[in-house]
Length: 350
View 1: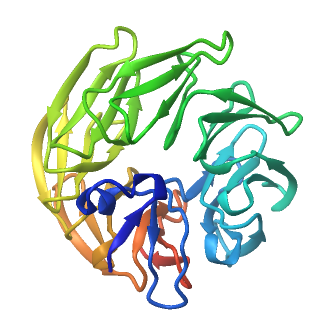
View 2 (view 1 turned 180 degrees about the vertical axis):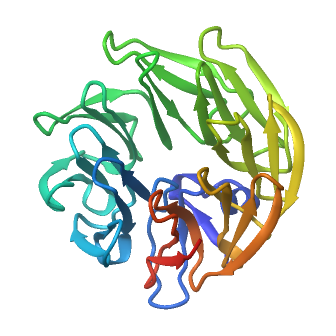
């Protein structure tokens, strides 16, 4: 089953189209077309609830620490989700209805629907100032939502495929797949600057301290960018790196390499191991407490489970519908392979 990217990326080669997480997917049953996002799940630490988008049913699945999942109706074709753990509010982007649904996590009810004026796609929450930043497909506008009032305004930052909030430096980073730079926004002054990212086709990302790591799908490197000096150092990985996961405790970085079916392990920004996984890996999720790394390969209908200490594959789990992300409940340690189709997720017991 081939995967296609978002419409504005269709002019790229098929090889690059297959690796991007923001793509149109053909389903084997009841075909559906829609956006797919790596941020398809979010966990509320205060409430102990895991939320997973279900675009086919225009809803979100809420998975509690105990009991059965519940369904929350939101806007059309929900795509990505984020939680403000201070306010217990959950934000869901709905590309189909060009909106953001606001869920009160205490009640698991939608309390507001905010128009974005364009096809909302990616989002990030700044808990320190109660703001939500939403990137819109086919638009150069970044929508900023005030969490206290649920009002929205727009900032012209350019097209965006990912948004990151840096609460330490009071900055917002906007990444664009079709660029060799990313945008740094000072939300207080409104100042915008373009920062070199080392190459074109930016996708996977992770931040630790003053370093931002960005995968270049077009080559075999990820960039380590100093956010103070903007110095860039490219780190060699496998072919076409497309997803990153950071173990904050050990400082190790895991890189999914789409073209050669491997995961590269970096320590102190140096490659220390290469682990063979199912072909075409596109998403990584860590369960640091259990020492497990989940690697999703949508085209193979497989999730590879790696024991991080030994760096060995311990399981390969067959999934009914292409898994494009994996969510882990940090209390139960049950993993959920997230899919787009009639089966929104598949439970993977620890």
